[in-house]
Image: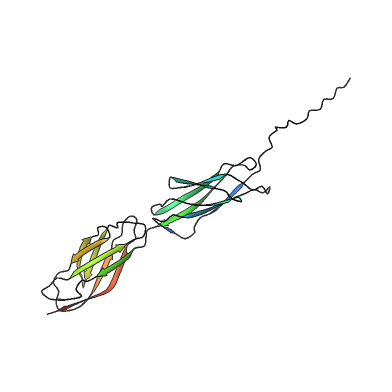
Length: 204
C-alpha cells in the first residue's frame, strides 16, 4: 500500500529577510575642521519594506548612531582634523529587512581664519618703532597659535601667536608712507592667511 504523509509548515517558520541597500548623502564640498559634518543615510528595500532600527556611521575612528524614521536618518559626525576620510554606514537589519553597508568619501579642510591687523599709532617719527598688533579668529579653534611675519619694504619681523594674539615692534624707518604686510603661518588645523593694506606713516 502507498502511504501519503502531508506535513504542514510550523507556525513559527522563519521567512527569509528581504535585501536592503544604503544611500549615503555626504557633503560634496569640503567640511572645515572643527565643524560637524551632517551625513544623511537612507536604507531602502526593493521589496518595498520600510527598514526600521538603527544605523551606525563611522569616520576617522569615530562612530555615531542614528534611528531610522521612514527608512532614513541624519547624523552629525564628531569634528575631524583636516584630511580625506572613508565614511562607512552600517545597518544591522530588522525583523524583515536584512543588513547592509555602504561607504563614501569625506574631505575636511583647514579652518579659514579672520586676521585683523591694527597699528596703535598709524603715524610715528623716524626715532620711534611702530607697533603692530595682530588678532587671529578661527571658528572651531578656541586659542589659535602659529606665527606671523610682518613685512615693510623688505624688512621682516616675526612674532608668535598666543591665544589668537601677537604683537611685534618694527625697526626704525625712514620718513615716508609704508604698507604693512602680515602673513599668518596657520597651524595643523587653521589655514594660512595674508593681510595687506594697512598704512603706516613715518615723519621726521
